[in-house]
Image (tube, rainbow, N blue to C red; front, side, top):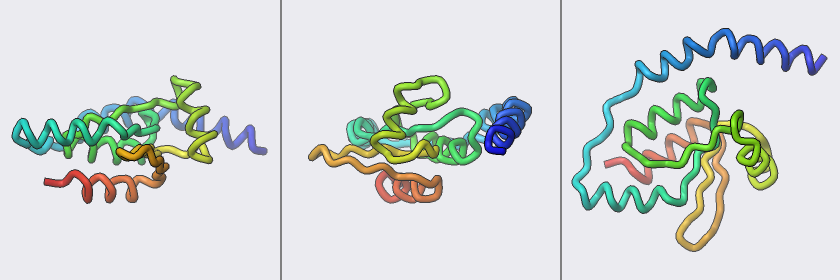
Length: 129
Protein backbone atom coordinates (compact mmCIF):
# COMPACT_ATOMS: atom_id res chain seq x y z
CA UNK A 1 0.00 0.00 0.00
CA UNK A 2 2.82 2.40 0.84
CA UNK A 3 4.36 2.24 -2.67
CA UNK A 4 0.97 3.09 -4.17
CA UNK A 5 0.62 6.13 -1.94
CA UNK A 6 4.16 7.25 -2.82
CA UNK A 7 3.43 6.78 -6.52
CA UNK A 8 0.21 8.80 -6.20
CA UNK A 9 1.99 11.76 -4.61
CA UNK A 10 4.88 11.49 -7.06
CA UNK A 11 2.48 11.71 -10.02
CA UNK A 12 0.48 14.48 -8.37
CA UNK A 13 3.64 16.49 -7.75
CA UNK A 14 4.70 16.03 -11.37
CA UNK A 15 1.33 17.22 -12.64
CA UNK A 16 1.25 20.25 -10.36
CA UNK A 17 4.94 21.15 -10.74
CA UNK A 18 4.59 23.73 -13.53
CA UNK A 19 1.81 25.50 -11.64
CA UNK A 20 3.75 25.49 -8.37
CA UNK A 21 6.85 26.91 -10.06
CA UNK A 22 4.79 29.59 -11.81
CA UNK A 23 3.11 30.51 -8.53
CA UNK A 24 6.48 30.72 -6.78
CA UNK A 25 7.88 32.99 -9.47
CA UNK A 26 4.86 35.29 -9.72
CA UNK A 27 4.13 35.66 -6.03
CA UNK A 28 7.54 36.79 -4.80
CA UNK A 29 7.17 39.76 -2.49
CA UNK A 30 9.26 42.89 -2.79
CA UNK A 31 12.44 42.49 -0.71
CA UNK A 32 13.19 44.83 2.16
CA UNK A 33 15.78 47.50 1.62
CA UNK A 34 18.67 47.93 4.06
CA UNK A 35 21.68 50.19 4.03
CA UNK A 36 24.99 48.56 3.06
CA UNK A 37 26.23 48.13 6.63
CA UNK A 38 23.02 46.50 7.83
CA UNK A 39 22.88 44.20 4.78
CA UNK A 40 26.52 43.20 5.35
CA UNK A 41 25.63 42.23 8.93
CA UNK A 42 22.63 40.22 7.71
CA UNK A 43 24.82 38.52 5.09
CA UNK A 44 27.32 37.54 7.80
CA UNK A 45 24.53 36.24 10.08
CA UNK A 46 23.12 34.10 7.25
CA UNK A 47 26.38 32.20 6.68
CA UNK A 48 25.30 29.68 9.32
CA UNK A 49 21.87 29.04 7.80
CA UNK A 50 20.92 26.35 5.29
CA UNK A 51 17.37 25.72 4.09
CA UNK A 52 16.69 22.12 3.11
CA UNK A 53 13.86 22.16 0.59
CA UNK A 54 12.66 21.18 -2.85
CA UNK A 55 11.20 23.45 -5.50
CA UNK A 56 7.63 22.18 -5.72
CA UNK A 57 6.90 21.84 -2.01
CA UNK A 58 4.21 24.42 -1.13
CA UNK A 59 5.57 24.83 2.41
CA UNK A 60 9.07 25.36 1.03
CA UNK A 61 7.69 27.99 -1.34
CA UNK A 62 6.13 29.74 1.66
CA UNK A 63 9.51 29.86 3.45
CA UNK A 64 11.42 30.89 0.32
CA UNK A 65 8.99 33.79 -0.18
CA UNK A 66 9.81 35.00 3.34
CA UNK A 67 13.54 34.55 2.69
CA UNK A 68 13.16 36.66 -0.45
CA UNK A 69 11.06 39.29 1.36
CA UNK A 70 13.68 39.64 4.09
CA UNK A 71 16.52 39.70 1.48
CA UNK A 72 18.40 36.86 3.14
CA UNK A 73 21.26 35.10 1.32
CA UNK A 74 20.50 31.70 2.84
CA UNK A 75 22.08 28.61 1.32
CA UNK A 76 19.47 26.36 -0.31
CA UNK A 77 19.91 22.59 -0.31
CA UNK A 78 17.56 20.78 -2.71
CA UNK A 79 17.08 17.30 -1.27
CA UNK A 80 15.55 15.97 -4.50
CA UNK A 81 18.66 16.78 -6.54
CA UNK A 82 21.39 16.44 -3.90
CA UNK A 83 21.52 13.02 -2.26
CA UNK A 84 24.23 14.20 0.14
CA UNK A 85 21.95 16.97 1.40
CA UNK A 86 19.10 14.50 1.85
CA UNK A 87 21.35 12.10 3.71
CA UNK A 88 22.65 14.88 6.00
CA UNK A 89 19.10 16.02 6.71
CA UNK A 90 18.01 12.50 7.62
CA UNK A 91 21.06 11.63 9.72
CA UNK A 92 21.69 14.89 11.55
CA UNK A 93 18.22 16.45 11.48
CA UNK A 94 16.46 13.23 12.36
CA UNK A 95 13.92 13.12 9.51
CA UNK A 96 13.67 13.91 5.81
CA UNK A 97 10.84 16.44 6.21
CA UNK A 98 11.12 19.74 4.37
CA UNK A 99 11.34 22.63 4.78
CA UNK A 100 14.02 22.44 7.43
CA UNK A 101 16.28 25.29 8.46
CA UNK A 102 19.69 24.19 9.73
CA UNK A 103 21.04 26.85 12.08
CA UNK A 104 24.67 26.94 13.18
CA UNK A 105 25.38 29.76 15.64
CA UNK A 106 28.69 31.53 16.24
CA UNK A 107 29.64 29.00 18.94
CA UNK A 108 29.06 26.05 16.60
CA UNK A 109 25.80 24.93 18.22
CA UNK A 110 23.40 23.35 15.74
CA UNK A 111 19.63 23.46 15.58
CA UNK A 112 17.31 21.83 13.04
CA UNK A 113 14.09 23.82 12.73
CA UNK A 114 11.14 22.15 10.97
CA UNK A 115 7.70 23.50 10.03
CA UNK A 116 7.32 26.48 7.70
CA UNK A 117 5.48 28.65 10.25
CA UNK A 118 8.22 28.10 12.84
CA UNK A 119 10.95 28.84 10.30
CA UNK A 120 9.21 32.03 9.16
CA UNK A 121 8.70 33.13 12.76
CA UNK A 122 12.39 32.57 13.51
CA UNK A 123 13.47 34.51 10.41
CA UNK A 124 11.12 37.40 11.18
CA UNK A 125 12.28 37.64 14.80
CA UNK A 126 15.93 37.52 13.86
CA UNK A 127 16.02 39.59 10.65
CA UNK A 128 12.93 41.82 10.44
CA UNK A 129 13.81 45.47 10.01
